[in-house]
Length: 285
Length: 337
Image (cartoon, rainbow over all chains, first blue to last red; front, top):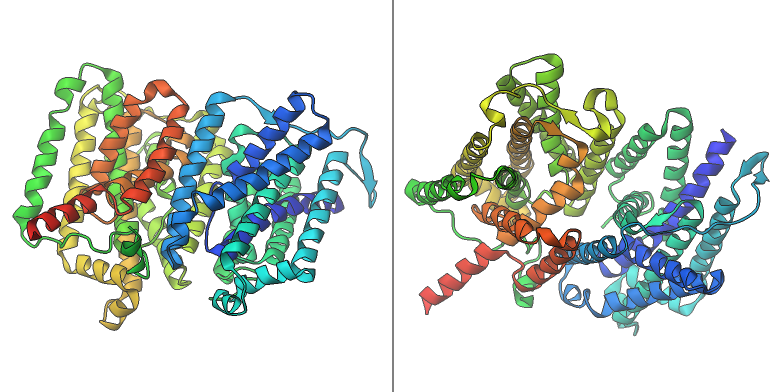
């Protein structure tokens, strides 16, 4: 039981980090980025190529993260331009369709050019014992990185002027504009941050299981479900939802079997959405 | 393009200024008969090749899917991302009823259609009761689609799992010969088209248009928005289930990817958006165009997906309402000047 809960937390932290990047862009810009998983895959591929070119592992990961940031900025400058001109539901719909197009382009090119590639980061050393349960070293390192990243994210939003400015735009865009905050600039920063988070997810996931070229769509769908369960626009909600869904799916996997665990996870997500359509910590609009 | 969007507050992509529903029966039956006649001649030059006839049948099946999805999403703004799952409910339901239970094929199709219809209606009822918006309806139905796909993979004993379900019922009937399946699917598509056309002319169609253009105003004018949404889902899901079941019996083997999200839902959405969401003939134009395009681009292999990505982006930036409404707009402007 303790083992499944710990496994669930490892999985849940990944879910949470995954959803954070998506939920921020939605909360701030009303944009649902369906190419989010593809951003993670491109970063993973960049890291892989760097490693293949015999770059040491840490700089290679650095290159992957930098690629993520650049991707976020490119998104902001290109495909999202026409979306910004719209408002409300039309904006969400168009963003959904245009980023779906981007996801196709990336998926089509990558699976055509590199059909079998995948990034796996092997963390050496034996298992570490936590609460009497032996855990894989890769999972521990991935979770540690995720926790540090989330800590940094919270420190950024609570402690810095820039982070507070971003939060003010999420809460009330018009009000933020009135006190001199440029929402467009905040959006650019958040897209860069979202790209960074996508890259980070790719790196930490590759420590637990390989990130293949075709993984993008699955990543996006999971991020979307966790995001909605947590409440669109809420990073804390995304974390909470990630950990709850992670524990649910891991307990179900150990006691019933893997294939039903995914269905139970989906069912849990559906029930949460139906009971609280605004999500666990979402704000009712 | 931008002003077209800003003037409407809600779902501007779902053709706000769509053609007026024509009132005369002839205006409906003439184009339907024309489409039927043209498509009925297609086997004359495709009929020699088994492969091409197979592709044509798939194209017609997707046209049926697109009509059903159009009725749900285009008419009442419910983003059902479980088109493949509802069709699969029909396909697998029909196959299991005919092969495992041993019912006649036609009875299996009817029962499977009813099941798909009820599930679609239930999903819509849940979404309406919880007053979920477009995006949340999309997520809930997407979750249903993913769960269905995983059930198929997991319950291998019933569904055949990943390797698929070979259907032995009707194996030596006309349904498996080279040409007849094409006419069966064509007939189904024309029936769906007529049904949709008649529905639009009836009071139900007026209610659909009213609630799609302005939900609050429709409610105030006495339209029971919730009820008409569920109606649309019941009818649309029945179409999806029936098309899925019929296709399953003509194909003889179905697998989870036959009805997968990436293989059905995404394609249907693109087809419909190309033709024109909410229009009568948009689904058919989209299905034919993309089936033909897929054949032209077949040598590109995986790179086809890239081409579709570019197409989707160009399409939504240039003609966000789809081909048919854009052409109608051009015609009207020319007539006015």
